[in-house]
Amino acid sequence: MEHFDLCVIGGGPAGYAAAMRAIDLGKRVLLVERDRIGGTGIYNGALASKTLWEIAHRVSSTNELMRTRGREPFRLSWEEIGKTVNEAIFERKYLYACHMQMLSNNKEGTMLFKHERGTGKLVDRNIVRVERSNFSVDVRADHIIIATGSRPRTAPGILADEKHIFTSDGIFAIEELPKSIVIIGAGVIGCEFATIFSNLGATRVHLIDRADRILPFEDADISELVARNLERKGVIIHRSAKLESIAVEADQVRYDLSYADGRTETVHVEKALLSVGRTPNVEGLGLEQAGVEMDPTNGLIRVHDTSTSQPHVHVVGDATATNMLVNLGEMEGRHAVERIWAGKKDALSYDNVSSIMFLDPEVAGVGMNEQECRKRGVSYRVARIDYSCIARAIAMRRTKGCFKLLVTNDDEMRVLGMRAVGEHASSAIEAVALMMRLGTPIRELAELIHPHPSITEGVQECARMLLGRSIFKPGIFDDRMQCYTWTPELEPVVVAA
Image (cartoon, rainbow, N blue to C red; front, side):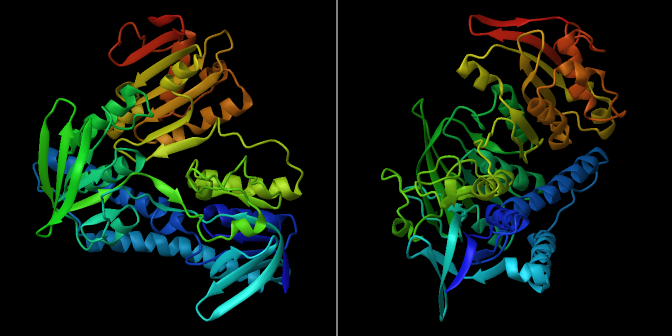
């Protein structure tokens, strides 16, 4: 029986990162993947959907210019769109394939790394069985990392046939752009696809939201800004709506809604997208054979940091049922390996994790927002500046957006969190994320020399507003700039800096 230091079950972003970190530490690794290396992160998740978003964003930008010139809108067929998405997927897949082949052809790599295609499951405490059609092999591993990813969550009474009613995985298999679509769920994935379809310009989009506003985990001003832009593109948002039923009738989808005020509504569309989150793939792994504790209430693995009840079994990525993001999965994969062999003791911290939502405009964030601070009773100061005050945004003709910087309510004014909404949002938050990690006060940000014109000058202006040094004064442009303090005892106090 072949022996490995580590067996990683699952070759998505988290599992692959874990395997590569173990190789760094000179460990012999078996990577087991039943389908395709890269997983959802490439094929029906981050890369594919963001390529779609980039295409749709460019189509929308082109058509905004076309409208100002009185010209017919630019349109792409789904075949043309799909070709570009497939090219992006192939490029990323090729990187993985070349990398693994080079590892296998390298003498040292051959000793340290092996990839086995198939389904992995534990049959004893340290024995993993790998199975595929007409093949089965048992291997022994000192340590095992579960990185089996996730799948779209289903909803009671809704059958996703992937022909009329799609999941976020199946939507990529549509044959042409629908004339209309309803998206069930107004979280990140639902709003991203609402943005994509509306920006492509060929589809009337309906978005069902059980809450009174989309993206309820964000501050109201951020979610409302996104909602207004979606509605400007023709998206119909059913707020505070309960989906009573949905069914396929005569090659269309009919859905029935009810509202808190007693109203009801029936709508017919061509297609539907079910977007109510994802659920971990933890079934059939034989974890009971290794004594790994499961939560009887939900059937998920009990995880602390990346550890399970058995010290030689770790869980990373979507399989943990929390923080289902590629960058966090990769971080967890590396962290698990470092806990095993590099003497790492500190638990993972998710406090300063940067995230991005591919909406219109894009939304990036790090740290806490206002509603999180208020929920925790954390006193803060905040500065908010509209993109219409930023020279680069004006030059780009993309002035719908804002920066929002939260700092501690003391003389140090260290960063608690930031939200960026608009062009270059994801790039603009990284310096602030580093400041949070290092505990750097905002006066350092205010004194940097930023390139001009650049979007990041807006972040600097937020810092200057909080310090009372801004070029434009909040008391003059109070519709575009705000600066105030919140404490648990008081309502927000506006400061005209």
